[in-house]
Length: 296
Image 1 (tube, rainbow, N blue to C red):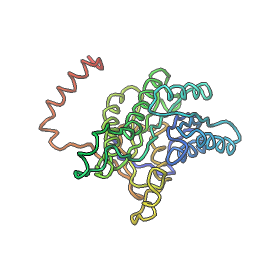
Image 2: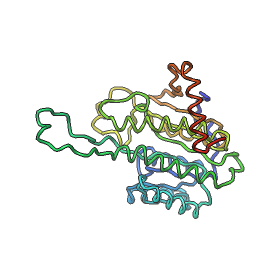
Image 3: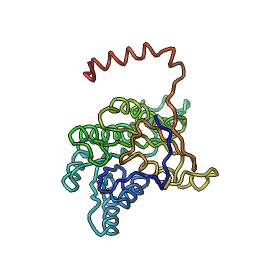
Image 4: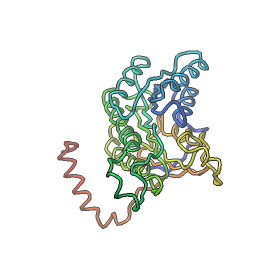
């Protein structure tokens, strides 16, 4: 894995390419869509916020003086919604070079608050898994769509790649936070998913990378908490720059690009006791891969 960090003067050429961006009505998705278009790309903007997404696409098209963005209402937890959006995008722009699995929501109470004094008077309730549904399963839906689309299209003649998947995670994917257990779980889950899929698709003309920012001023982080923040938040422009850095002809694959303030680094894979377990791990990987038909 490379640890090269891109700067605004060395970002890859993406003019003429097409991106599919989830969570595009606000936050990272909106800023990303605007930046992609400014660099000559077209964008399929999807979000459950239909009005916000359509307004954003309209503004982008007005500034570009042509149709470079389309907006589609999508619930990312529904694979069928994402597939429909892709088909509309393909009809409009011909292909999709980049999928950004970006949509996410904050933590929701998944269990009632711990209170032994009242527990016996309350029924045992079903947990609310909405955070996992959106932040983990919704992103896996985007990934499943991306991989199948890439498999069915020829490599981009300029970059040589069938396509690229970029996943939005968080530093909480590495350092779990007791205040947001399901958010932590979802962000850690996509880190492992990225590392697994990057290895599998490495020789197939497909790259998979991940962006893991610290606190950034987006709607997902409470405004009152942002106002009281003493540490420097991540500049959203830097986060977007890192997302774009792995596009085009960039060969980077399997990177967990981590951002805190203005510092950028590649978060390394967890390797504690790996050598002691390597042989058993590799046997397990081989056996399961054969059972799944991934290799002979």
